Length: 381
Image (cartoon, rainbow, N blue to C red; front, side, top):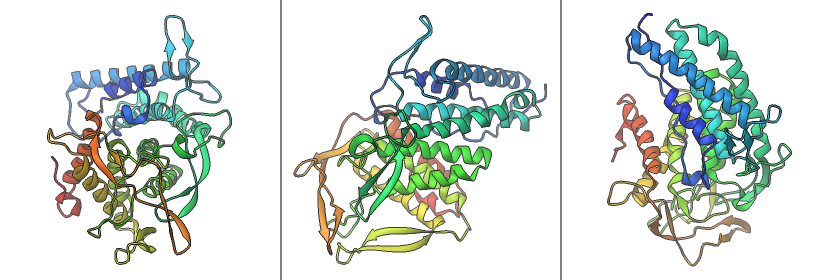
């Protein structure tokens, strides 16, 4: 067998399959690995054989998981499956767990593409189109988590269609008000949608990723502090005031990817912000997407680093200590109601390692880019 550059995806997809059946309270208490990055190291014949075998095993793992834990028609996913009794749990998987399935399929598609590039076409011919269809089915049936609501944010009132934590019986009918949707769930979907776009070229994936990115950035605290700077940070969800590492860090890499997609293009987007002079007036300006996504990648990175990085070099779970309490506050400016800033005093909570991982992955993307890219000025700590 010829030397090649086949990516070895077995570890990731094994973990994703395990996550589909593992326990966990919420997406903020566990993590999904970042999308597969390209591998450029040549491997010898023995390693090529191992890589192909691992890819084949990964496909088998995902296939059996889909068969045992998913409904064949609606793709309803159950949280647990007991292989000894062959019984699924009554509990449905959250959208965060469901996204782990999408990530596993993305990882296998990347592996199949790498195999084809190395002239190892057997697995590609057998499985690639089937997995492209599986990916599409997973996204289509994610709509059982989808719902629509009206949100009063820091800069506007707008209706959004986003993903709830829990699945319901009809597509598009999920209750997503208050704490029933969280920003980090949308972020993990954005990461996979962009990876799926990179793999397949399907523009619908890019459009959905940008829509959800717009939604979570609408949660960015644009209110102005006493020094004339944005308070910044994204709460756990629209129904929360605490700002978590898990609702900020996972967005950094996707923002950089979006910046790169629109690099040297003229497409624009509306940016909403508060006038720093009077610290009240809500303003809108049109900016190039390339600059917009880059700016927010830097903003989110710097906010989390400055607020949550502790003396041990890892990130605390969240900014809490709400003043006067953790109820969402509103203000009326020129007769219009907006969400107001809730001061947060303390960086608290367990320093989960994955919160450092999302920051490091984002910073690594910055520093890996050509030095002509302004992102290289970011520092990795």
